Amino acid sequence: MKHSILLLWAVAALNVPSASFGEDMTASTHRFTPADDLNKELMPVHSDAAFSEFETAIKQQRAGAFTSAIDGYKKVLKIYPDCFPAHYNLGLRFEEQKNWQAAYLEFQAAEKLQNLHRELYKHLWFLALKLGDKGDATMYMTLYSQL
View (cartoon, rainbow, N blue to C red):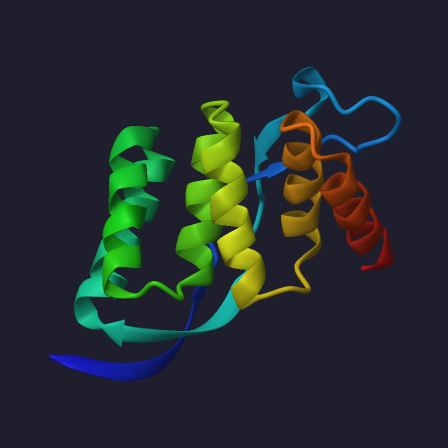
């Protein structure tokens, strides 16, 4: 049964880069550390199934079962393609696996849904550099520094 519900729930950006990007943006300076608190967001949930899959993916992520978490976020996106937290978290998991292109695509999808997210621009900046797109890297660096 599909319905829209407006719920407060976690973006669950459990791992955010702790490094400050200065002159050198190598993979070695781009670290992930657990966040102390989850960012709270208003998010429309289109079905109980999407909510359930998201909660399961978060639990798998916390348990370190990253492949299962990736599968869970993909299931959420099949049900609810405009789910910012699922795109964002999927981007994080791909980035940790050094799957730069897949991470970049997920973060770009997340940006279309919520374009004033500072950490998102930090990831897009890093990934644009990794993929050799200096134009996008400059754009994302500028957006990051303006927020």
